[in-house]
Image 1: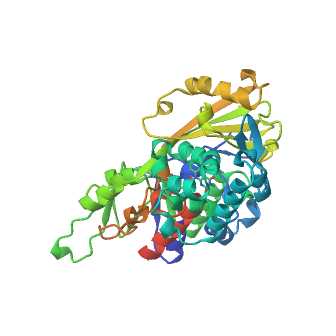
Image 2: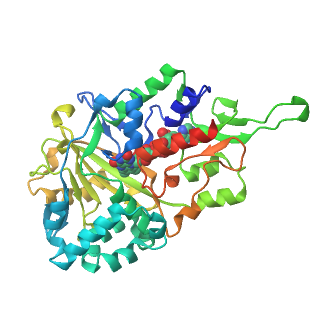
Image 3: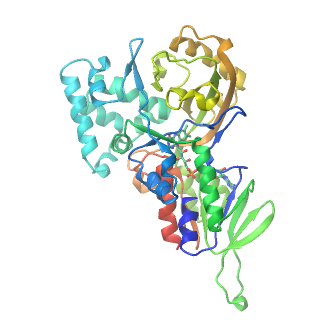
Length: 422
Ligand SMILES: Cc1cc2nc3c(=O)[nH]c(=O)nc-3n(C[C@H](O)[C@H](O)[C@H](O)COP(=O)(O)OP(=O)(O)OC[C@H]3O[C@@H](n4cnc5c(N)ncnc54)[C@H](O)[C@@H]3O)c2cc1C
């Protein structure tokens, strides 16, 4: 959508094909009839440092709809939850021990915040680097659970530039859009239509091929884009799906490029959203970094209505329980009820008064492509936006490296692709 905005403004005719019946992709949301706001299928917020996204929102004239509350994030240590949303609270966190550990934690944090040299950091794993510089206790308390939670069996291979990017480009104030991210996607789609971009929702692309042009036709070969409604010709095409799907849509890409796409590693995600009669966190915490090694069946518990007031959801309390998982994990094939049975004992740990009767309704959203896995030396493995097929471009979450995926970087790479296509 960001690419379409720039290309249309530069005078091109633009068509967006979207297989879903709505805009927004992974950042889309859903709504009960009595809710004023939608809820994201996969919990979403912005950081104050998300300058590409906030800049685009300003260009669209929608900046008065962005809000930045300061919800509370907590970390677990020995059966208790501790606020972890400021440097002071981080230094107070008992899991860091005393003296030297806190100093090492402080210096490592400061170094990662100040250095811009991620190229050096991508040559080493986060596991090795943190063990060496932050020390075993700090690493095992702070970073190892995060790495295991996000990357499962890949965790020891993830490079240090990934952790650098998270520390470098994140803030404690978290932002959202009035009405929810879906409202933003809908308003953005409306602005694109007003500009003259054609958006075809509910239209899945099946293949993209270079057209055959015979010499007597004396015209440049375009790209033939096939949906269930037939094939159409375009001069240039930008694909923004997962790398895996790109290989299926464009099997004529040279073998090397296809191999590069297929070799990229990524994690899926399963997120349960619950509408509850009561709040889970008595203290009003928003984000619980959950230690899976303590036997919790998910990585994050997020009480959305401690970020956005419950009045926007007709008084319902909205809670997410989510996890990043390797494809083939049993959660992908479990029914919503089976998953709920697995999760209920954990909800009781967060609030011993929690009862099944608190649940109004649950929803479960699953995606195979949620989080790219950047291994050592990852910058050499990033597929080029301009593919070897003339006029065909590709921009995905796997290419925003060294940054971690996010809507901010989706906007950045979309606009970068548009500049190459103009
Ligand atoms: C659990 C989770 C939490 C996240 N939290 C945050 C957060 O807090 N903040 C943040 O900024 N970002 C967050 N993200 C990341 C954010 O959602 C992504 O970075 C962003 O949505 C990527 O945008 P995209 O356009 O590249 O891809 P997508 O959002 O994946 O969009 C791709 C689109 O292509 C469509 N499509 C697929 N196949 C076809 C086809 N054959 N034909 C036509 N259309 C097709 C899909 O329907 C989809 O709409 C999170 C993601 C996950 C999974």
